[in-house]
Amino acid sequence: MSSINLISIDPAQSAKSALHPEVFERLARQCKVTAATKDITVSYKKVINSFFGISKKTTKKFSLTALTLRVVAAVALCSLSLSQGMDFSGFSISWIIAGLAVSLLSGCLTRLSSGVAFVASAFMAYSAFSATGMIEVLPIICMAFSFLFLLIGPGLFSTDQLLRKAMIKGARKNARRKANRLAERRLSYQAMRYI
Image (cartoon, rainbow, N blue to C red):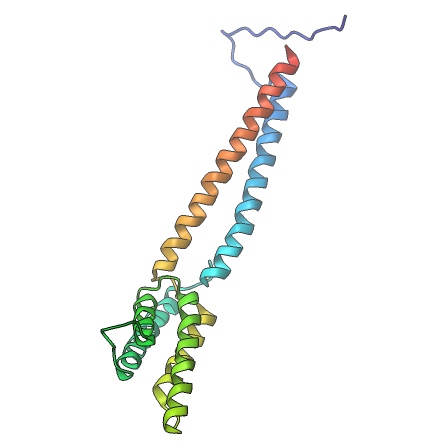
């Protein structure tokens, strides 16, 4: 029969140090779980930052400039959709460009809407050139703004920033919950081992 190590503790006296090596093991496990959780959220954060085009380094000054440029780009896209004539009876590319202008103005999925706006503006520029044989300036301006926001992102003052914060907060919460479940399993395993 194996020998059992039994430790008795007097509840009236306060302990000056750790009572059992298991305390150190539990602390070490918790530290490792926290580090693993941090690694998971860091990699997830990199993906989210690259999708939305916002990172920790984005400044408020840059964001104000981006907001001003987003307003100018939305006005240019709206004037482009109005210049082509809004067909109220059916669906046309003018409606798509007007919707993209609203999306760009609010900063909701800016990189995605900028990519679609770039393609739609290029289509409008090509159709205007093939119809008249002249290059129109407004579709070229809209293409330039769309390409700019495709590269730089929306800035901090946008709906994308709110979505980004909510997604990162949810990922941290899920990672913490998963780490706590894993730590509880390990502790229950340790408790069963000493019984």
